[in-house]
Image (cartoon, rainbow, N blue to C red; front, side, top):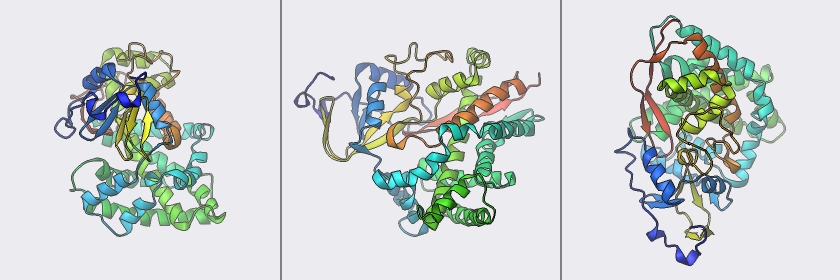
Amino acid sequence: MGSATAAELDLNELPRMEWDWTANEEMDPNSLMNELRERTWVAASSRGLEVFRYEHVSRLLRDRNLQKQPQRIMNRLDEMGITEGPVREYHERSILTQDGDAHTRLRLPLSSFFAPRRAENLREAARTIVQRALARIADRPTIDVLHDLCETIPAEMFCHLVSAPPELAATAARLSDSMLGPLIERGTDRTAEHVTAHHELTALLTELVAERRRTPGDDVLSDLIEMNRAGQLTEEEVLDQAGMLLEASIDNTAHQLTWALGFVLQDQDRRAAAVAHPPAQVVEEILRLASISGAILRFPLATFEYEGLVIPAGRPIFLHLRSANRDPRVFDDPEAFRPDRPMRPGPITFGAGAHTCLGQHLARIELQELVAQFPRRFPDAELAEPLSVSYGPLALRVRRCEIRLIPA
C-alpha cells in the first residue's frame, strides 16, 4: 500500500473491519486484529478508519495533522444528559479535552512533576504502599483483586502525591471510578453518580488545596499552588488539575494492575517467567501483551494524504495499540510472553507524541512493585475463577478477578 498513489486508493475500497463492540464486549478482538494486520495497515469500518501496524500507529500518534477532538467527551456528556452546568464546564476546561497551545499550557505543570527522574523518587513510597496493601489481604482465603487490592494502591499513591492522609484513599478510589467510569462505560445509568461525585470531589480538593496553602510541601498540590502564585494557573485550574490527576491516576491504574496480575496468573509459564526475570522487564512485556489500552482515537484537522490515502477532515481514525504491540514486524513471536525480549522499540501502550500519558513512569513503578512483591508474599496464589473483562472500543475494563491466596 505504501507505494500506491493517492489517486489509486479509495476509502470505499479498503478492507473492512466488521466488529460490533457492544455485542462482542466479552470477546477478545485479538484474532481479528491479527488477521487484518497481516492483510493491511488500515481498514475501513462503520465508525471510521482502523490502523493496526506498529509503524503507522506510532507515526500517526505523532502526526500534527491529527488531534483528539475534545467534542468526543462532550458528546458522551450529551448522552448522559449533562448539557450545561458546573460538571460540563469542568470537562470543557480539563486537560483531557484540550489540544494545541491550551493543552500544552495545562500539561506543563504535571509533566515536570511526573518526569522519569522525579517519578523514580516515588518508588520507596510505592513499595511501602504495596507492602501495606498486601498485608491487609494476607489473612483472606480469597480476594476480589480490583476492589480488595488494586484500587487501594493508586488511591494511596494519590494521597501521597497531594500530602493527604492515607485514610482518604477509599474515598479517592470511589470518586475516581465515579468520575471516569461513566465516561468510558456506555449507558446513562451512572449520570447522577457522576454529578454527585464531581461536587464531592470539588469540595474535597478545595479543602486539600487550602491545607497545602497553609503548609506547603514537596507534593503536586504545592507545585500547582506555586504556579498559581506565579500567574501560570488560575485558582480554578489548580482544582481542575488536581481533579484530573485523581480521575486518571487511580481508576485506570487499578484496572491495569488487576489485569496484569490476572494475566500472569492465567498461565503457569507466564508466572514462572515473571518470577524469573527482573520486574522492569516483566512489566514491559505485560504492558505489551496485557494493557488495558485498546485504541486511541484521532481526527484530521484538515484533509491530508498519508501513505497514498487521502483522509478527509474529521474522519475518525482508531489507532490500535493492542494490535501494534503484537506486530511481528517489530516483535518476534509476538504472542509469546517473553520478558527477556529486546524492547527497542518498546510497546506504545501509553501513546506517543503530544498526548503521551503523563503518569506512565509512575504507573510502571506501581506495576513493578506489585509484580515483584505479590509472588514472594503469595507464591501459590491462583485464580479462583476465570477472569471476566469487557473489551471496549478504546479500553479494557476488568469486571471480575478473584484470586485464591494459598499460604506457602
